[in-house]
Amino acid sequence: MTYTSPLYLFAFFPLVLAAYYFCPQRHRSKVLLLASYIFFYSISGKLLIYLLLSTLLIHHGGLWLGYCKAEGERELLASQDKKALKAVYARKRRRILWLSIGFQLGILLVLKYSNFFVKNINDILHIFSFKEVVPAMHFVVPIGISFYTLQAVSYLVDVYYDKIKPDDNLERLALYLAFFPTLMEGPICRYNQTADSLYIGKPLDYKNLTYGLQRVLWGLFKKLMIADRLNPLVDNIFSTPGNYSGITIIIGAVLYTFQLYADFSGCIDMTIGTGEIFGVIVPENFRQPFFAKNASEFWRRWHITLGTWLKDYVFYPISLTKFGKKLGKKSRERFGKHLGQVLSSALPLFGVWLANGFWHGTGWHYIFFGMYYLVIILLENLLEPWVVTVTNALHMNREGIPYRVFQTIKLLIIVFTGELFFNAGNLTLGFQMFASIFTGFNWSVLTDGSLLKLGVSIQDFYAAFFGLLTVLIVGVIHERGVSIRDEISAWRMPARFAFLYAAILVVLIFGAYGEGYLPVKLIYAGF
Amino acid sequence: MEQLFEILNGINPGIDYETETKLIDGGLLDSFSILSLIPELEEAFDIEITPGEMIPANFNSADAIWSMITRLKEE
Image (cartoon, rainbow over all chains, first blue to last red; front, side, top):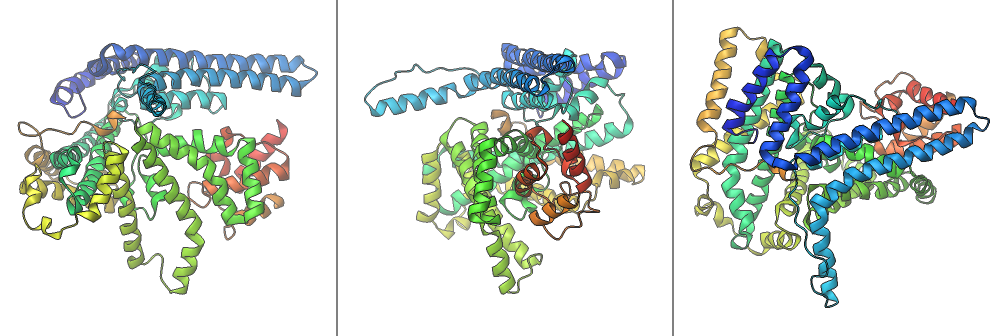
């Protein structure tokens, strides 16, 4: 069962909604929790035990941190040496935090990464003529573990820093980790964003229902009109890259990027819409990323919740270690304000991009993907004053259309290249595909009809193009701060219903589903 | 407070720190500026700023930063 399967759309979700509606308010959170566990079980079966274990461990870890803090405060009242006692309890709490985080990350590392580590250890030992020293381990990875583990860690760290109080209500905490629309592809929610509103069990209301369903429909549009339409072509090029070169590889990278965006942001639309129906505000994960001016801004608009998670729980903690602060100070003293700032940010940014690459999967091409963006973002920051000087000397308006077009083209090349390596089966294939762009470049591919032999028809291209154009227009409107759903809700009822029926018909008629179509699996659910 | 304004102007000049209330939310101070600001604040006011303090509410205005400094000095 996935968010676009008929079983989910026409049976599971309506049943959950009905049960939620007819249940007394105090039991609605139980309906959502039970539905979440059924959803999880339908995909990962008995691996549900890992989610339950993570829930129990953060519940216990949070309470332990809270108990330790309360005990410290009590003893502090009677203590003579308050400073020493504070230090004792700070150390104690730090140990509890690391132990609790260790359990969470340990489960993730063993289940998701052990095979990667074993393979690399064996590869290294192979150089010294040892063969298969460490036996391969194959674990089945539960759905959403990369997402709910980050939520669990954020809860523990936020309790440690007193941003939130430890929750003694196991049901609320369990629902925070397991809420079914967020299980497959996130977004990565924080405890103070969703836990309370999920637990309250708000009554369904007309506005939330209509706004939520419209958002779900928009997500389905992106998924069925773009991601699934383009899937045969993208799958063909990336599964047999040796058969293609030049422009075909470029087209593969470009269309994969759009497919990924449509798939991931479409799924997030469905998640946010479902949340809205239940009166829960799930955080946004995308904000027109292709309208960014540079790679740093792109990552503030793409997979926002992962970016902010990495900023809060990797970037700042590394920056604010004694070593990080000392490095920052020395760099600024030695190299001046700008260069010092860039150099001092290199260490925490390395942590961020290593974690970003590693989080996405177990392959060196993912780590390369992270390091690729690390280098680009450091260069962007380093060259910023130089760009200002040069553009001023050339009397170029950095806010003018020509310069914005240049920035967009530069960003698109960066993003398409990154996604080429990201989706290549491994790093060697990534480099081979990249090199083949230049070695086998031939314009005739565009006119000799070979693009139509890649698994998609001209009708598929038209449908995907119409879908992408619609996404672009909606993006422009959103970028101007206009809420399309607010606009629609102000229309007269006949116009409103006509528009919605038309939107549903477009998805039903032009969406890629049924026989002859192999829908792309929710891409980020694999991470 | 005057010392705080001096530090802020040294990090990122050209902002009206007396009235601005969206230093973070408005993108006026980014992560890199904050990284430069932290050691300056720690040294000037003899405080220790932990990752737990790194929330927009603590850095959105000079008043908010000052409140954080005052609170950390008391702890």
